[in-house]
Image 1 (cartoon, rainbow, N blue to C red):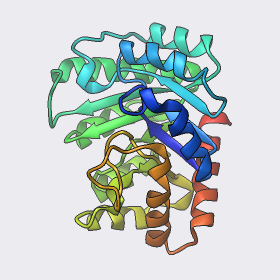
Image 2 (cartoon, helix red, strand yellow; image 1 turned 90 degrees about the horizontal axis):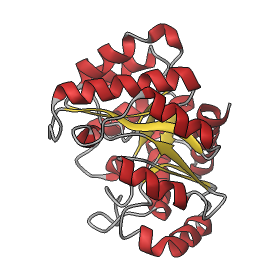
Image 3 (cartoon, one colour; image 1 turned 45 degrees about the horizontal axis):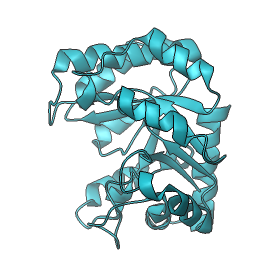
Image 4 (cartoon, rainbow, N blue to C red; image 1 turned 180 degrees about the vertical axis):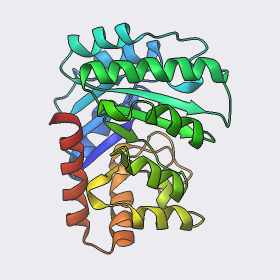
Length: 253
């Protein structure tokens, strides 16, 4: 298994990293991708990725952080080319639910990440909340650039998913799909092609059932994998093989 999106630089994971890694290996995780959300976050990630060969990282600014963290495509390109364990760009995108940063700052930052993704041929890890139309329209402006798109913790509509598939996007399922009130989301993942799906924890957030309410960690991905296998009516082994191959295709091909 591969946890395609976690935040190892957040507590309580950071101070317990040795045990977090051990528990990850114990349940069969082969790779962990720890995601940058700010400049401060990225500095921690540069240290974390050196602690174990299974850990990889990204460079990016979360839409919540764009007011305080002004990033350019050149800055992203410099950092991703200097370290072969920085394999993705993001977490970027648009969040018009909380609006912790104004819309203009979010859009400018998103486009800088996209430009860097194009120039480096690196996957783009996208957060989108209450911004489906805007997110798609921006991505669609680059439809001829062969963007490598990963919709992280996807909770969007079926229509949004269908439109994103025209851009060859991948979709990552989080522990949210295990929640009882996520029937519509489960149906969307039932619809999505197996060769377009990844799994993630988004830990320390969004712990899956039966650990909902606890601090999440990568080893809990096992529950998400089992639930997604049930949704797709396949064995967990087949689901894990597909999601692992999809990750490796997206990030290493």
